Image (cartoon, rainbow, N blue to C red; front, side):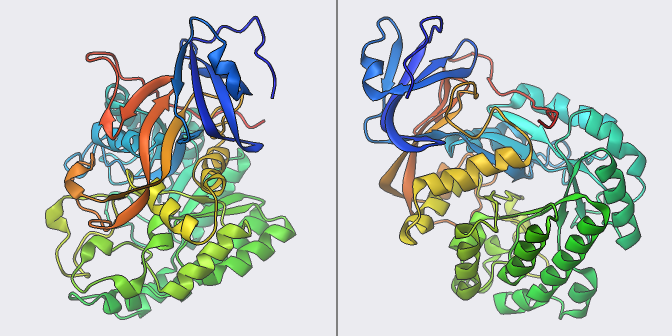
Length: 461
């Protein structure tokens, strides 16, 4: 590791015997300019004791890792702020080690399908941001002409559905609309992210009704995901377009995705903590806090998802935090809102299962920080190295805690993880060199302006 350039003037040094860098885990001192919000250098561990007059924080054997980047969060603000909001979502994210989130275009009113709607959302988010926030745009019927202006205004990409989204103000694209939108997005080098379930196969499945989870699972068959993914691969190949598969649940799609990549098709894929840590076999009847679409599947399918992470077919792990008010989680799987709240718990949930399966903290960092940042082109995020934003989480990986919904900062304390004992306590979270969360509580001087910023798309390198 390099020595500190004498021309650099850090005002903060963070030390740990376990720092996760792009070259692996090592004992190091990280020199930071909090004034500039960036990392100046990653130095030998003992350097931190020799920089006189520089504030030093020593984390001992706790792990210093880059702040997580969660590219799949439904903040629902404005319009459904009683479900969630930028103030509560970003506070929960900070408590869980997340320093950057990307907000989904739907569930807010208006949805982010025009530049005017984007500005409304930005104006709501700006004064409430505890962490950095980027935005997805939406591709819906009739807004093809809005896609390039949204791209130019800084959205990180565009989301669409192939079937009903769950809210009427964000309708899905039919095959012709999907092709038209993807052709337009490919024309300016953008990214389309897709909720991939085939509507015909969903319509042909038995509709969900009542409290039995088995009935709900049967209503969202794996075949619906598999067929949708196949169609998207074909379309991405035909148009030379970039496509990202959201919240993959069916591991049966992984061989097709891997084969497409070998052909050079620009397709990426994510999965979510709940698919990696929860199984259909453990969902009690009536427990609709476990309801999401696509659904949590069986343990054997989960094992295959982990194999897809291990071999690199699955690129990243992001929350798909999709909260609602408690009254919408009735005990009827046909009527309850489909979404799992996990923004504050994603890191310990994934780490708990990852460590059990023999994976390392470095693996989790790659899946939950480095790869999501790369997906959306946020080149200052996702790693501890000189020039990056000084965004960090401090994790005690061997410590455990039991999830108490009342301790969550989400607006509504409804979670499928209630009562679970998880490994990995987030000690503190840092954004551009400023501590923003300390043992789960907001940190910093009272009255200090929030440090979160609104992010825009950066030109591709």
